[in-house]
Amino acid sequence: MKDLDNIPALMAELGARAKEAANELAFAGAEQKRKALLAAADAVWANRDKIIEANAKDLEFGRQKGLSPAMMDRLMLDESRIQGMVDGLRAVAEQPDPVGEVMAEWDMPSGLNIQRVRTPLGVIGVIYESRPNVTADAGALCLKSGNAVILRGGSESFHSSGAIHACLVEGLKAAGLPEDAIQQVPTRDRAAVQELLTMTEYVDVIVPRGGKGLVGLVQREARVPVFAHLEGIVHIYVDKAADPAKTIDVVLNAKTRRTGICGAAECLLVHRDVVETLGKDVVSALLAAGVEVHAEGGLAIEGTVAATAEDWGKEFLDSIIAARPVADIDEAIAHIRTYGSGHTDCIMTEDPHAAALFFERLDSAILMQNASTQFADGGEFGMGAEIGIATGKMHARGPVGAAQLTSFKYLVRGNGTTRA
View 1 (cartoon, helix red, strand yellow):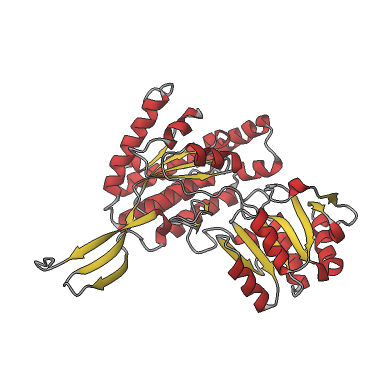
View 2 (cartoon, helix red, strand yellow):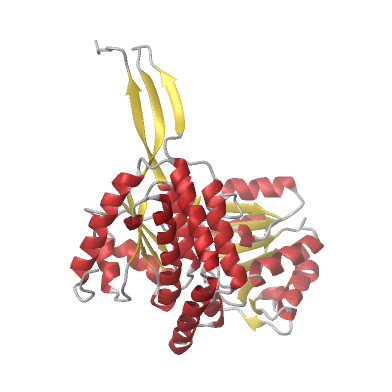
């Protein structure tokens, strides 16, 4: 590998090699890709001790950097999380191959038969922060969809990502696929990110996965098209017709299961008719679970912190939630439209009319009823894994799985057909 001090040359070489690999991957057989992913899964499990050892170096780096407990949790790998990576790789391996799928077919009076079929995007650049499992998810989904990928993990996950990447390369070798199909940027130098964002000759799309600072930088500076979600400002609205037991269970899970992921609830809205009953019970349950609640109005019970204007529209990514009463479902919808990020929002209600109104009038990528927002995940949607949650409206939206990493082309067949 080239001189790590010459970042433009380094990235140009990665790009050229990825482009060449993408040309080969575009027509790789479904069984060959499946074999690569299953072999990669086996390699991850076989090398789990090495991955955990590499992760220990990253955790020490994170501690020295002063990462928050939630961010350290995102960074940490143990045997159960490695098993989750293995399961994800195997799940993606067993999914139908999207490449070549006939999306639509029709005949024209002219005699033409026209098919619209899925085709890979080409080369995908994935830029992510602390979660090293993204290395496996992104590599798997890009391979499954026939795309080459250049992975640029965060500085804090450098060693873990490298150990996982080596396992993915083992899988490629076992299946006879080009090793350059999944490449990792071999430096922590931030200049590599700047180069990747402007490599229009080689890279077809950028997927940033991380906090507001990273995604905002990518969206501002990229010359390559971007699939992105800016933030996961996730709301749960407790309607007056909410079931109390379901609501307490769902809100606690949505906030506390993993506080540092983008599907974690960040704001609780409660219908004024149930503030004194269910609303206070939910806040009490959150406090008992160790959550810091920034509340106003009738939800500001003993133990809470007074909410400020900065709490609305804030992605805490920590054991903190903002809470406020609302007059009705219309005010809840207005609040979410004002402060939400278009990621995931949930209504707790047994009233089908209220749920239908919530689903109809909000345009978040994912809308839920009576379910934890922690389900906002491609694996939980049956995609095996995800490369991220896209909150834009162009091309991909919501969990981005293998099918969302394809475009399409038209295949037109005639029989000596000419146009009048």
